Length: 155
Image (cartoon, rainbow, N blue to C red; front, side, top):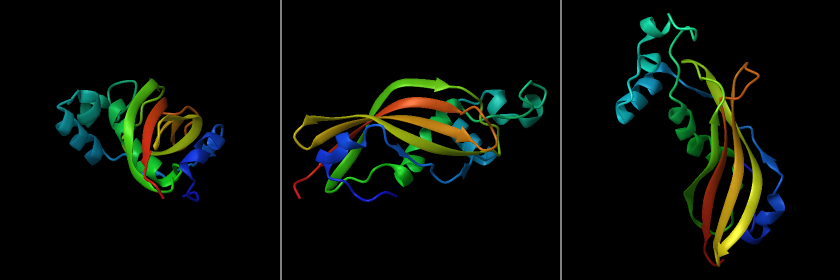
């Protein structure tokens, strides 16, 4: 994890890469739990026998499962801001799922800061390009331009 930065110094991070995070295994159990939570039980995610007969050769994670792992992975590598009161998911400008994540694969994330803008006093909007890599694969699982609002207190 990087050294804490003052919120006013966030614009200086534009262009800087953070990461990679540690690897995280996407197990079938995790995929099944996500399917249960979202009620998305398409066979390609939860039926190993049937999925083995597809060109993918087995089950894959939901794209949105891979995306939903980002708060965990990014917490390890994102810039730490002095006097942070809270960080808020502010949305996604672009998102592309480029390659499926097979059950049992490991993923990790990288972040490049694209923009840092003070929206209101003590509120900084950070736009970052997130790339989720799959171990031993050339193409990433996804690329997203994600937005986070950092709310900082006086300090």
